[in-house]
Amino acid sequence: MALVFVGGLALRLALVASTPGLELYGDQAVYAAEAARILDGERSEGYRGPGYPAFLAGCQWLLGRDPVAGRIGNALAGGLMILVFWALTRTIFSPRTAQIAAGLLAFYPRAVLMPQYLLAENTYCLLLMIGIWMAIRATEGAPRATCVVAGAAFGCGALTREMLVYFAPAVVLVLLLGSRLALRERVLRTALLVGTALVVVGPWTIRNYFVLDEFVLIGFSDGIPLFEGNYVAATPKAVFEKRVSLSNRYLEEAERAGVEAVDRRFKIMNDRIKEDAWTAIRERQPTWIFEKIASNVPRILRPNVRNEVLLGQWPMPAEEQRRLSKMLLFTLFLPVHILLLLLGPLGLAHWRLASAGVLPLLYLGFSFAVHIVGNAAHYRFEFPYEWVLLTGVAVTLDRGLPATRTRRVVAVALAGIAIGSQFAIPDIWRSGFG
Image (tube, rainbow, N blue to C red; front, top):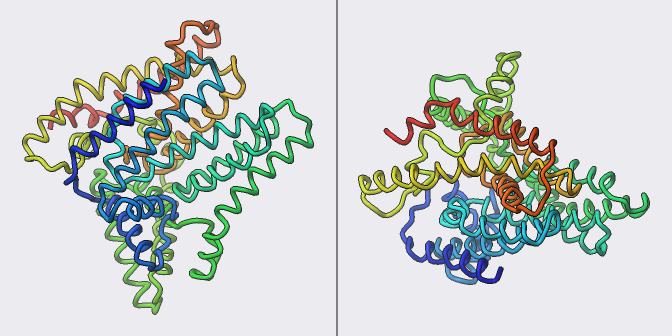
């Protein structure tokens, strides 16, 4: 296990060291700007939660104000994630499964490349894993301190990606119903976990109230994915352009209306964008939800996969990047992902062997639902649930666990859903040939 950890961490750090000039674009630039505000002592815009910008600011405070500092922090978080993943799968299944799972995550292509990008998923996955691992241990009678650690991890995770807030009811149900402890002890442990999470999130919520003069738990950026996932337009690019146009218009209208605070303008813009999205959803029912299920079931490849998913805007000639991206797509990413989809569901069907395994499965379903309702066009959103599929692969490869009829039935169903979506979108495959 030590060799796996060292190898995985060294690979991530080596990749960071090899790409010092990697350009920041999109959300990466936004996170970097927020981190700079924190370091300069300026007030945050509050558009998103402060978790990841605070992490970047801490890395830059320690290592210097350069994007490479954040990438080093991402790589260290990725290395720690290998250890937590090992501990989590060891708790749910077996030592052998844990070793296989850690080895898979240590060298899984997406996990290795992710630290290059200043994106919140680098820390979100780590916090999510810690929270689930500690919550599972809490249900099994570990010291009550595990509830506090789980609550802190979930609280920090929610400040990093607000969608984790909506997963909280599942964690509470598992704590209350998935344990053999006495009812009083279960209630106490649930209160400890939830209370700790609220203590972590609370200061930011209070800050929002004084700044925005209304209750906002964490952030107000949920309108964008909802809009881009549901608005009607000829192409995804047209949807994006429409959203940008409306966002700018709503911001300008708020400014003309005398709204001086930038935070308030963004809040008004987000609310109006969200109204447009819900209008589009209502107008497209009842068939739209089924179309969404068919098109937004998680998938790794997008029309822009070669330029964004694989290499981003790396410091190399465009033609060389296209050749390298195409080679990586068809020789590495596509085969690995198909294997992940084939073997992952097979192992996930083992959940009956360990009731604690239901919590990662619930997160997998939760993530599916979020992306069906919202926008599944951002590749990085898939990374948080791919580690659940990697768990399934590890269980499949651990031949010491018994096979069951339930396992085979569930495996076929999950594999059908996962693989079917890969072939349902022609653009996925055309993206490699453009």
